[in-house]
Image (cartoon, rainbow, N blue to C red; front, side):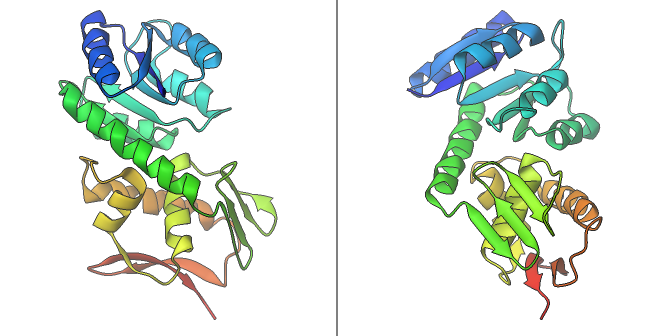
Length: 227
C-alpha cells in the first residue's frame, strides 16, 4: 500500500485529506509542523508528500529544500495565497506541483493520481539517454555535460528528459503539461514557459554547440540536434 505524508498545522484539513487518501488506497502519515514532517519523512519513507507552506518551526519551503537534498519523492505544496512568487519558489526548489487554498479534496487526489501515473510511466521507460556531450540519468536524476554535473531541479530534468527522449519532435505546451505534470494538472501554459526559460539559462552555462532547445513559434518546443 503506498504511503502519503500529509503535513499541515490545520487538523481539520489533515483529517479531510486523510479520509480521502484512505479511500484512494493510501496509508497515511500526519505531521503538524515542519520539524515533525522531516522526522516522519525519514522514518516512514512515504511515496508522496502533501506539504503546507505556512507551518510552525519550519515552513514548507525549508522542509522541501531539506528533503530534496536526499530524495526525489513527489511533493505537492499547499499555499494559502495564490501569489506567483510562492508558486515559482516552490517549483524552483523542487516541488512537483502546488495547490492554492481553499481547495477540494477531490482535486488534491486528482493531482496525486496524475503524479503517480507519471512516475509509473517513467519507471517503465529507459532511464539513461546519451546524446553528443549530454547524459541524462533518471535513475539518480543526474545530468552531465562534457562529464561535468549540471544542477537542475527535478521538474527541469523531467522536461529535458521528455524533449530529448523524442528529439526533433515538436512538443506543444499542452503536450509538456500532460507529459511532465500529468493529465489532471490544473495549471496553465505559463508554467511551461517559465520552466523552459530557467532550464535554458542553466544549460547555457555549458558548451552545447551540437544541440539546443528550440522554440517553434506559435507551437511549442523541441530538442534539436545540430548536425
